[in-house]
Image (cartoon, rainbow, N blue to C red):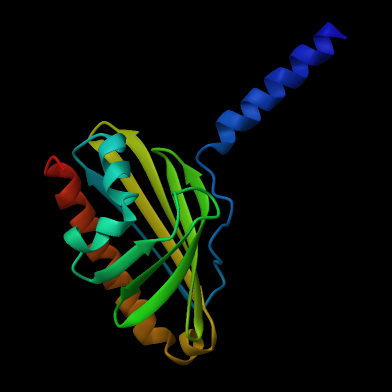
Length: 169
């Protein structure tokens, strides 16, 4: 009995450790719009996390975002609204693993998205990876333009996150 309990404990611990960098909702690789990108940031994961998760201050360091408003304490299930490229987006946090993974789903007229951030310590400081998939009738209709815009916006967001995180907050 004691051996069984130890084995169960080890399996549970291994699953917990392995699952910390995983998201609760993965992007849809078959969606009409899919983008991913990454950047090295010369600071700690904790500093990057602090900037990234301060949703209400996104517009202070990312000029493509405005009116970001968190509706409640940041956790899985929390909702927030924000505007980018003229669209008001309603988002809901699906993954929140402190200093490691932040993910949300978002909806706007004719589109829905899955957006995930991964933060990993590295020799250069912190590796930040981001991925997003988008689908919906407007996304299908304007697939080429939305893919181009998302790629540009994702690069801009990463560059601005790097600048803000390295500035000492």
